[in-house]
Length: 407
Image (cartoon, rainbow, N blue to C red):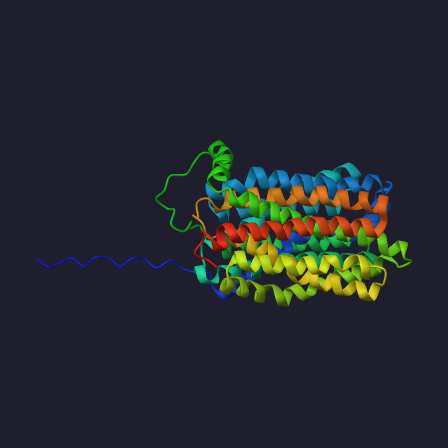
């Protein structure tokens, strides 16, 4: 009788470089949708005949709905196929932004923008999807590459929407956006696969159980609260500073186009962020996060003394622009290396905390500027950034140095 030969374990297929690139482009397209309105908000207000105070409800409701969508939809990524969930939500984005392009009533436009925000979970689901399909040694690099897509989407939206609207009208911006979303909606199902790495034979929890499990995950992985707080502060520093710049430069006599030119420096992230991801792979997420946060703090400290000269202001903006996304990358690395079955729910907690921090800080940034000017806005950013650095040091001593094998 012939001796049976044990089957060799089936090797899991990893994402190819082309697939990572396509997912990165998809991240750019789906992220950009929320940022088109920022440079053209006055044109949209004029188009609907509403005042500039009322038009603010459009991006505000979009962000609130985004946080709600992340909370309610993102946990499903640990229950259903990531491919199915992304396909569904991206289709929802396509229909919503098409509604924005053709809406003739302001209320319908606002509703479409709100629904768009609710379905905008793909930028946060795709990194989790990719983390299950790449070699652990490439996790930081691939996460950074997808983050570059998000940065690119924000950059193109903020820089391109104004030019297109000025030349062809603001609705043309949304015609282009809808066309891009249609392409993504068609291609993503072919790029992604149904397989959930290592989970085919494991039972799936119910949806209510997934939502309630967030409390248990936070209790068993309290570090997600630390990473989420760090990111909330980092995102808050970014928003509060740019809210201040948007008010400060016009007070100095500059046009709002100068604000856009300064924002365009984020194009550097397209080249530097993947490299910083490789640094994080080599150095470790905890130590590299602490270093990136310290560099960001140095840039924030220069805002006050250099903020009264637009050319000197470029220096702190460059420093903050270079390392800001790197803090986000290293934050995500602290939990995207955990059990694949819980990564999406951990991402949910992380992203919700990020938007809470960003929402509070953006409001605080404008309020402090109104009361104390550029100096007050700069001090607020310094306090938040100093707190951020302190938390990264605590995390490094707790996990990166004392308890985690990753240095």
